[in-house]
Amino acid sequence: GESVGLHLPTLSVQEGDNSIINCAYSNSASDYFIWYKQESGKGPQFIIDIRSNMDKRQGQRVTVLLNKTVKHLSLQIAATQPGDSAVYFCAENTGGFKTIFGAGTRLFVKA
Amino acid sequence: DADVTQTPRNRITKTGKRIMLECSQTKGHDRMYWYRQDPGLGLRLIYYSFDVKDINKGEISDGYSVSRQAQAKFSLSLESAIPNQTALYFCATSELGQGRGTDTQYFGPGTRLTVL
Figure 1 (tube, chains in turn orange, red):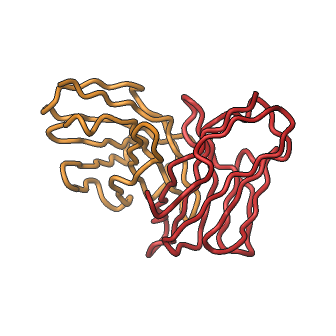
Figure 2 (spheres, each protein chain N blue to C red):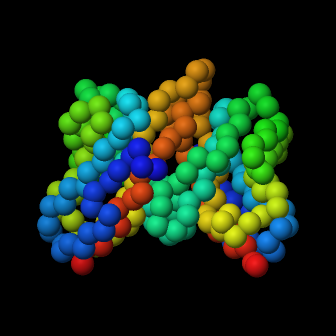
């Protein structure tokens, strides 16, 4: 069945280091992928997205990489800051409204 | 996101009570959603609505009902609350982007519901 999973439920990084959060998806028909950030007490917030016709997309301090061959998605955060501490969700969209969310990875940033 | 608001933010109720959670949005989006979030399970879709006249069940609709009162308002009801409905509930909105599969969702701040 369809699923979006995460390799690591918790990630701890030193402030200033780069963070990499990984995600595996199972539906090869998925053609749109999104990363969300959820801070404590708040709803998920859109960070960056990527379509299946791309393998890399960059935003401000964030980069998403898509490897369709192995159905893997990653979020890279450059120069991680304390404000980056949150739960990060990957999500896949198989067309239209249906978005499947992963369970999330909690990122801790150590000062 | 201040464009999507939810009330109440926290609610404690007893088994068997009827509860309504409300969601309002000022983004002008046609699509609205209700999710529940449980630890380790991510977000699961309860109901979704593409416009005022279109309501659809999600993957876990049993025990819930919804009402789309207007484009900007989408409420979720628990007809007879039970303890395993204790969770964090999120409302979200979206508009279909250009092309297939570009449905970015914008979430409200959530409602923490506890059923005793």
